[in-house]
Image 1 (spheres, rainbow, N blue to C red):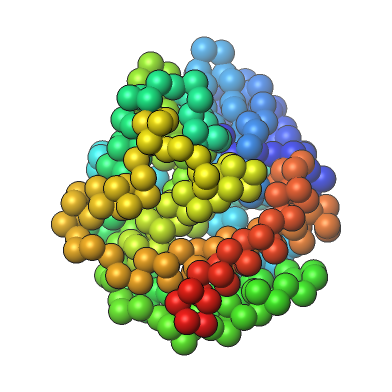
Image 2 (cartoon, one colour):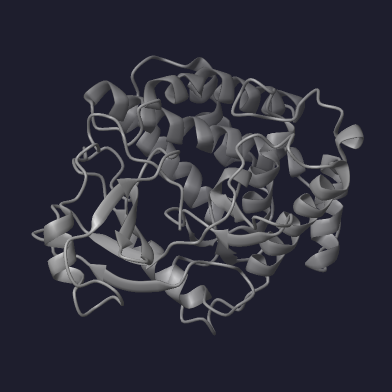
Length: 351
C-alpha cells in the first residue's frame, strides 16, 4: 500500500471500478467483477487508491487525472513500477507489484497495481504516540533501511540504466532550476541566488547509488505492533544519484521548525528518545562504511533549493486546478521559507 493522496480539482476523478475490474479479471487473485475504489489520502502527486475485491485488498497507483506540462519528468509511474520490482527481496521493504497498464483507455490514465500493506503512517516526527525507546528504535530502523538502499548493487538489480552515474548534483541543480522557472509565479530572490550560487560550489562526487529521492517519515509504512519499517512508499523521484544528497534530504527534518513541514528544530530530541542529527548521520556513516561527511551544509542547502522547486510546481498546479491534493495551495506556500533556509546555509558557506 501507499498513502499518497488524491483530491483536488485535477485528480478527484476516481477510476471506474467496473472498467478496472474487467481489465484486472484474470490478472489479480479475487477479482471477478467490479471493484470498490477508495482514495487514499496524504500526498501531492500521483493519486493512490485502495482496491477492494471481496476479501482481497490491493493498491492502485495512477498518474493524475489531468496534468499540465510543467514538470516533464514527473508522474513516471512506469519507473516506480520498475524500481519496486527490482527491490523485491533486497532487504529494502516494498509492496509486491502485480501489473502495469499504460493503456490510458482503461481508466483514463496509466496505472499499476501493488499489494496493500496494512500498517501505520506518521506525519509528525515527534511520534507522540510512541515511548522514547520506541522512537529511538524507529529512527534507527529508518537509518538502517536508507543505508541498505544506498549499499545495493544497482547494476546487479538490472538498474544500470535507471539514471546517469556521476555529476548528479550538477544535473539536478540544472533540472530543478529549469522546472522552477517553468512553474514560477512570484519572484523569490533567495531562489534566484541559489540558482546562481549552487553550481559554483559543487562538492567532490560522492559516488552513485540507487536513491529514493523523497525518503521521509510519512513515505514509510510502519508495522502496527512495533517500530519497524515494513514498506517504503512513493518512488516517483527514484533514480541513480548521490547517497549524501538523499541522506541530507532525509535529515532536513531536523532543520524544519515544527510548523514547517512538521520538523524537529527546537524540539528536545534527547528527551523524546530521538537521536541528534549528528548522531543519526554518524550511524549512517557506520552502516555504509563512509568517512565523516564534508560539505554537509552544502547538501542541505541543495535540498532546500530542490524542495522549494518541487513545492513551487505544486503551487502552480494548485493555481491551475490540476494538483493531486486538496491542500496543495497551502503546501505550496512554503517556497519562500525553503529558499530562505537554503540561502542562509549558502551564506554561512561564504556565498
